[in-house]
Image 1 (cartoon, rainbow, N blue to C red):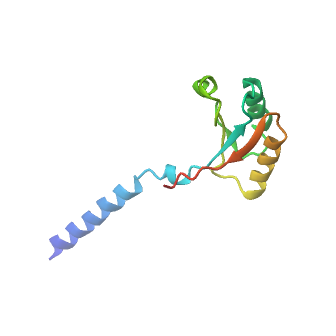
Image 2 (image 1 turned 60 degrees about the vertical axis):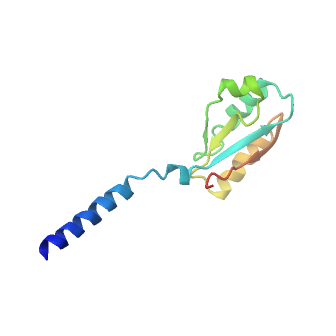
Length: 112
């Protein structure tokens, strides 16, 4: 009987360790994507990113991927907002709303 208890305990331990090693980062990843007017120059994209990069401490500007600028300039300015609260998010959105060329923002749902 003791062997069965030890085996069961070992199985639970292994299962627990396996589950604790699961990558849940995609579940907590939140991004704010900035959309620009058609034909907005690269300089407006870069300026918006730099102007609002420090608008709030918990929003982190992501680097602009050059291929996005070359292809269509849609969604190239992004901020990680994993830890921002509603007030910080409003500050960031307000900053972006004052930038030339910015048409709006979106927070995609990555839970699908």
